[in-house]
Length: 306
Ligand SMILES: NCc1[nH]cc(CCC(=O)O)c1CC(=O)O
Image (cartoon, rainbow, N blue to C red):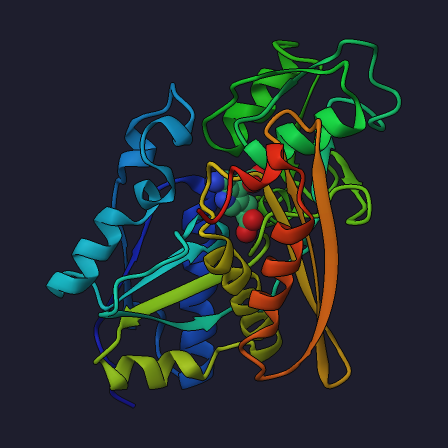
C-alpha cells in the first residue's frame, strides 16, 4: 500500500521526541503505514534556548509553540506534537487541535523525599511552576522555592546533586522517559495538576482536512473532551503560565466533573470549586470560572480575568 510522506514537527527535548515517536507509531499502526511515512522534524523553540529564567519573565507558553506554529503554517511540517499543558490558551485560528493521545497519569511526583510531610522545616524545593510553588507553599509555608528549569533529566540531576531538597515533576513525563519508579505520586486531592497535564496533543492546519482525518483516527475522545474543558476554564480566566491554576476534568458517566483551584502566588490564599456539566455543554467551565472569581480572595482574583 502506498503511503504519504509526512513531516511531524516537535521540540527536540528527550520527552518531546518520545512523544513524537508515540504519535508516529500510533498513526502508522492506525493506517497500516510503514514507519518511514512520517519524518520526525525537531524544531528548537525559544523556550528551549532560554534556560536560565522563569518562563513568566520571557513571555509565557508561546515560547514552546511559536516556532512550531510558524513551521506548520508555512507548510514546512504537516502536523505538530505538543505537551498540551505547554500550549497557550488561545491558538491561532489557522491551527486546529486535531487529536490527543490517551492521557497518562495526571499526577505530580515528588522527587527527593518520600513525602511532603517528611521534608525538613524550611526545605528548599526546585520548581519553576507558579502552580507548584503556590500549592507547596500553601501546604508548607516554611518551604523555600528556587527557580528550576531545564528538561526532566537536568532537574533529576540537580536533585541528585543535592542542589535542592526536592523537586516536583509530572508523572507523565517520568513514565514516558522510562522512569516509572522515580518519585512519589502526590494524589490529586492534595495537589491538583496543571490543566492538560499528562496529555499529548497533535495540531494540524485548520484547512488541512486530509491530515485532520488521518489524525482523527488516533484521537482519544475522553482525553480530548476533558482537556478542552480544562482549557476552556483557562480561557474564561484569561489565565496563562503566570497564573497559579490547577484543574482536572474527568468523565463521570455522561457528564464531566471539573475541579479547579486558583492560588495567590505565595499560596497564602486560594479558592477551589468543582462543577459538573453535560458532555458537549461548552459553558460549564465558564460558569465555574465565574464562581471561582466571585469567591476568590483579592490576592487571588487580581491575578485573573480583568
Ligand atoms: N514544561 C514542562 C512539562 N511539560 C509537559 C511535561 C510532562 C508531560 C505532560 O504533562 O504531559 C512537563 C514536565 C513536568 O511538568 O514535569
